[in-house]
Length: 319
Image (cartoon, rainbow, N blue to C red; front, side, top):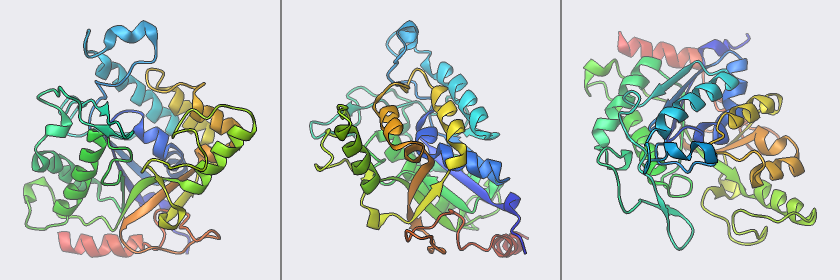
C-alpha cells in the first residue's frame, strides 16, 4: 500500500529569517512538493542582523531599527520560493527580539555586551516554550528539526531556539500540562541540523585546488573545523533535494540583506555543483533510526515511522 505522504507533518524551529533556508531549504521544498505538511516557526525577526546592502543600512538597529520589518518581507518571499504556506512567528511577530551576538576570540558566537530587554536570549524559557507547545498540539508533527545544544556556532538565539524546541516538545507531550494549550502530543523523532565533515573538507580542497581562496572555517581543508561541522559517524540522515536546488537558491536570494550570492558558499556550490546545497544532513536527537540508504544514513526524516498508527494511538489518547 502506498503511503499517504499528505499525513506526514514536519515542524522546524529556527532563530532568525534565512537560517531555515540555508540549513533546510531543500528539505522543505522537497517535502512540500511531495505533498507533506511543513510548518516553519521563526523565533525572532533578526533585528540585529548585519546588513549587506549599503542602501538599506538605515534600517539597522542603531539607526531606524526597522530591519525586522524588512526581513519579515524577505522570509515571506523565501517561503513562497520553497512552497511553504505554514510559516509562524513564535508568539506572534515581534514577541521576541533578536539578541545580537559578538565573536569570542576562539571563533564562536557569544551574547553581545548590550542586549535588548525583549531579547530572545533573555526570555523566560517556560514562557517561550509554551508558545511552541500551543503550535505543537495544534499541528501534531511527527518530526521536529532544530539546532543542537550549541546552536551550531554558539549564537545565543540559536542556543535558545534549541532550548525552547526541546523543552516545548517535552512539555507538549505531558497530558496534564496546561490542557488549555491543546491536547498532548509527543513528537516521535527529533533531529538537529548538521554539516558533513567529509563533504565540507572535500569542497574546501576543491576550491583550493582550483586556485580559489578559501575564505571560511579557517581556510584549511585539513585543519580544525567549527562545531557546526559534524563527523560523519555522528550523522543519522541526509535528505537529497537535488530536484529542488533552484527553489533553495531562489529562497536564499530572497535575503539580500543577509546572504551574498557571490560569497564563499556560492563559490563552493560552483565547484561541487548542486550537491552542496541539495544534500542536507541531520543528527538524530530522539527516536529510533529507520531504514538507511547505501551510505548508512536515513534518506527520509520520516523513515521508520508508521504515521497512521502514530496518529491513531495519540488520537485515541486525545479522545
